[in-house]
Image 1 (cartoon, rainbow, N blue to C red):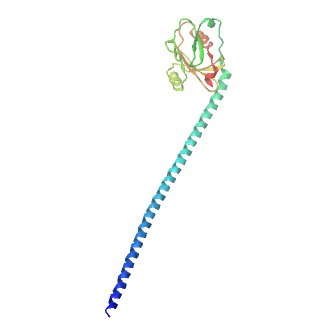
Image 2 (cartoon, rainbow, N blue to C red):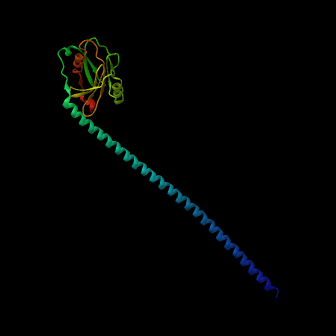
Image 3 (cartoon, one colour):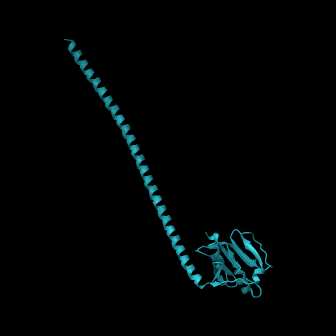
Length: 219
């Protein structure tokens, strides 16, 4: 009769052990599920961030292409405007013709800017091979900002157009002259001059008529 309570206790103990083992398994499984869920969440977050970054990159590239296209359109429109204006200037430009006297003057050659010019013997260049500085006459590489500054400082702004050696000379005249060459909508040199002496304007026009240009500077 004493064996029955012991047997019952054994079954209870075995059931308790099974329950503990079952709980341990489920806890272990739950912990694995939690780890996998955390990993899946991190992966999803990483993918989401990568997608956002990719979308941002695509948007930035699209905006950049749009800005570039917009600038190219503006540049093309400005070039068309220059061509149209150039046709108008060509129709009304005064041709400059060299005189026999100017053929005896000293020839100055500017290789970097691709032009030559003749001047009377009493002129000396205080500049260099790129910048010609004869005091009353300065010739430098063309720069739009510099041209606007010189025009603003000039005491007269009467517009003038001349034609020499296949190119336009465009600018303003007065006590100071501000000119640039132009062909195909492009310019290479900027001229500032303040002619002096007797017959100064006539001689200055004779000097301008001696200009020659190397065409490849505009290509």
